[in-house]
Every structure is written in C-alpha cells, then in structure tokens.
Image 1 (cartoon, rainbow, N blue to C red):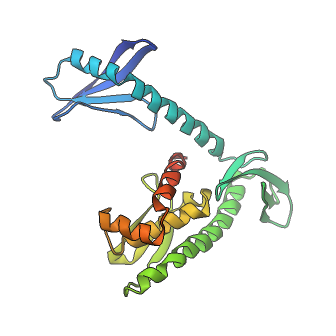
Image 2 (cartoon, one colour):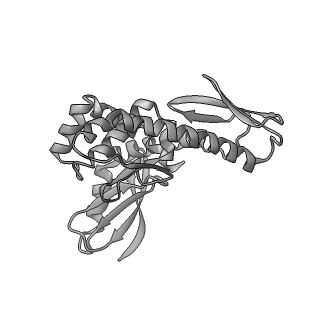
Length: 246
C-alpha cells in the first residue's frame, strides 16, 4: 500500500487529493472530517487518468462536503475555548450562554437564560474555573440523563428488564452506547449541550438496544412506537455532531 498526493483541474480551481493504492474492489472517495482533505483509495490497476476523472466528476459533492465541514469547524471554534474567559460562549441544553467570570470568595455557578456566571476567588485560574464548571455540569448530567431514561424505562420494565446503570463519558465516536450484558448505558458528556428532547431521544435509543441489539426494522418500530418523531429528533441530533470533536 502506498499514498501519493495528486491534483486535478476543475472550473473553480484545483482539487488536491491523496490517492492510496491498496487491495479494494471499488474506487472510494471521502472528505476527511478532521481536516477536509480529499482521500481516494483504489486498486493498483486503476489508471490515474480514470481516478482524476472520478474526482472531477465528484467535484460538486467534494466542495459541498468541505463547505459543510468549514461551517462545523466555525461552530466548534465558537465553543472550543478552554480559557473560560468573560465573553466566551457555552452551549447548554441547546441555548448559547455568555460566560461571565467574577471574583468572589463565595465560589459557585449561576445559570440564567442568557448567562453562566462563574464566581471564584481567583478568576484567572483556568484550572479552578474548569473544575468548577465541570462539577456543576456533572450534577446536571446526572439529573437530566437519568430523568430522560426514567421517562421511558417503564415501557421496558414491563418486559422484565432491569434498569441499566447510566454513566457519562467523553467520546468522539458517538453519542452513546448500550451494553445489555453489563446492564450499562453510556451517554456522552457533550449531550448536555443539546436540547433535552434530543437527550430523551438518545436515552430511548439506547434503552431500545436492551431489546433489539441492532438497528433492524423491529428496533425502529419499537422506537417509533414510544417516540413517534424519533427519526426527526435523530436528524436534529446529527446536526450537533460537530460537538463530538470539540
């Protein structure tokens, strides 16, 4: 297997792409979500002219994907500050809040409709600010995530299923997972950023895996039976996927 950088001219300029030769049946193209680079893989026998033409034929889709990625990167940058300075933005339960940091011996966090106020003795100590905020968010996660699970668990309890343990973890690979054999559901810490209706969707999604381990028709029939707009909520949650990489 080897990789080379190639370039093809199109009406809007040039498209660079990384070509990887390996044993594959088809020509595969993707725009990498981490940096927007175009990646093509093909078997050793496919002529480079055919690959260039393939990339050119998909130029519209490539540009569309890169534009969407840039929008996501702009959103990530908006909420990616680790300094927690006054004026920084925080996304909480689907609402954008402005952070305000105040010097105060009475340490605490106050949340209003438009602001999140951090009060602590040393407003310049990033570590203390981060710990203070995370402590408050962890309390909110435990309350809101468990409330979302409890809202739908009665449907599954009637089938003799024991209530799973709920844990919150950071993950870049997905919003959650279910381990039926361990009686465990993981819900991503970043879910605290999205509206509660979407947290409820994820809770029901993982609960349904206690009955249906795959995403079969039976799985979606069960989901839709308990949450008729589940597929709409799923699409809405996907719009927040950029948060997984913050």
